[in-house]
Length: 338
Image (cartoon, rainbow, N blue to C red; front, side):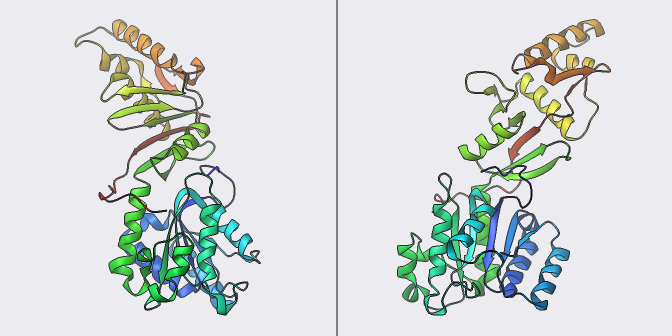
């Protein structure tokens, strides 16, 4: 399930599915007021009935939230096609926020509205690995008595249903907490010919493998830094560095330079960071060359690091990324229920 650079609609970590656009509009406004970055990470599935009011609302969303991805599933004519559509919009390990009753879906009979619950279960079941976390929204009263059994049969906990009347005090804080725990890291990557941009990233093997199979080089920062990607050699395609090591620092500088379209790392500056104080230029140049020889030895090809105009730089066509802890740190909590 590629998500990093697939064409067309991209898989996103957060998907909202509501039966009426005004419910979605209220939710988007409440999220945007606190964490506008989450709107840019989201897809809104607009399943309200077509017409001029619907068209006007969607156009208003495009103006208010230009980074929001909006999908109108006019080709979904049955439960399975709709579930497959939603699954194609979700990142593995993502979060689906869905109304417990999707009354505007034409293939769900009004007297069997609880089948909306099984739609979400089908979406979740379409992921072989890293299934999404599902949370329901409801404005019903006493829902545990009216559809608690259906939730349990679908594999959901009725206690996880969020009350729409408490958007600011319960729903939005709940969505934020889920998101920050599921995606505690941020990837900044360059995928030529496009310029660098950012994505939220989880700690799962699914996300890590996706990045390392898509990018030529990706540096994971933490107490132990790891370099991975398609160009990295070694038995497992990864190289680990202790915190604060000179080599990890040089890799980070090379990657940051590439992500910002820099002019490379000056040879004498590289030598100056690793050489003794007061060293002559020739000694610094030699030290830098030996240091860079070590870095090139980590890769399947030495051409990935070029020397141009007395500076080291990564190739312009390389796919490069850096993964750092998110600025929104997750709060300690029990593990997520999927």
